[in-house]
Length: 321
Length: 276
Image (tube, rainbow over all chains, first blue to last red; front, side, top):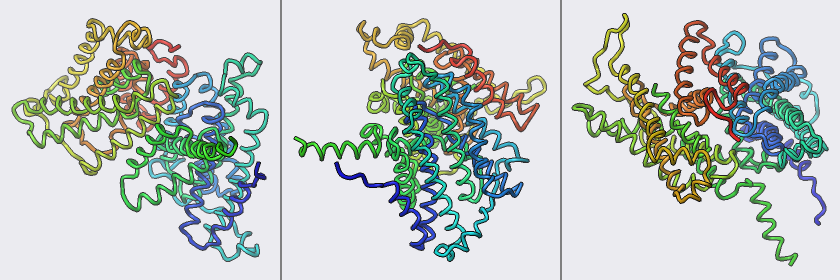
């Protein structure tokens, strides 16, 4: 075997240097990508590893975004408090909703997650006093990153670059934690449940409790992603929790490859870059997205990661023979 | 009532084919556009509106048939996720095709001249067309139910919903049956769109709105249950309008809360039967 290259570490370091390239646009794009990567990876914990198809994952993303937004804008709390709060509140809601959801199976599970997400969306859409209603909540302040100005290298960068660096580090920490979770005995058990829930029950696993735990964890990380996104987007809007967002993130996960850890991140990267490229040519992005999706479903059900693996196997086999 | 038409198609596809069809809302939208287009060519006078409405619905039915025959068929027996995402992809593609063909501006169809008057009923003024729709809904429901219960085709459809393999083993061409069920469902969706076109403006985006509403209706009533869908549409309408009356702000919330509550207590809906 080839010696293992620490790809994640390399990518992390490369990501830190994006602002140094100087282009405001690419930093913006990269920030978008990493937040979506976290969001998609959190969904993958459910869909890919536990085999629970959630059609309402945007709910927790939205809840996280609103939590951070409200805390920072209305209560002027510092980011250090508002960011973990996004995860906590989203996790609490995931616990509440998940308790009901995990009692159902398959299509009904998907429907109930969708119903809850729509409830969240309806509340965000209508509760003007707290969420700003239809108008959303513009101008969420950036966290106070003046301390970065006192660091040697990053001193000359813009505030948005400072925020980008902060999100790179935070997303990296989150992804690392998720990786640990997936590789832990707990994560293995989730995969067992995906493969055969009945058997898992037989060997004494409390399947529902494990599913609920996965649901809550996925909710927490989606909330954190949402918290970052609200600030990055300079505002929080009700469509963060709308069901089309849920399907968007599902597509990313599928595009990258479900059940592989880095797949969703690759999917997020691919989809966002593609979107950037295509919208400059045509306004019919949904059409292109739909076509991609159809090709993916019929041709490469394993997503990009699956396709790469297949290609790799084809290339390697002759040598082994 | 037209919501019932749309939800009935959705429910039929789920009940027989076992697939939640996200593109169903798009069929509805395309039905409205197709009617608009036919009206442009033919006009609405002299009973031509009915021709265009049925023509629009038939066009959508044909489209549904093609989609099922060439694409959808390959996804039976695969993961629900793939089926859901495929229908979603279909909704995206067809939605954009509609945008390409008809642009983003609102299109409206004038009411058929026979039904432009209004009726004074219990002190309220009701346009005759709306009244007509209110009566047409139950009529179609009844006709549909009779087809399902009393005819040979209906028996086959019900049999296919119960056990696909056995029906196939007994010599029925299940593949063709599935195509026809999908065609019928698309027809209902298209007809819903065609009939709504004189009442509301046809715009892109009406598909994503209606599909969520239709989901709620179908889930409340019971996925795959015919009278359940009818009941669901009635409940949905009541909750929405009384919700608006009593707490205007939270009527949408109430609808989704109802959907969640039904799913929690009886996941298979009020009149549905549990799936194995």
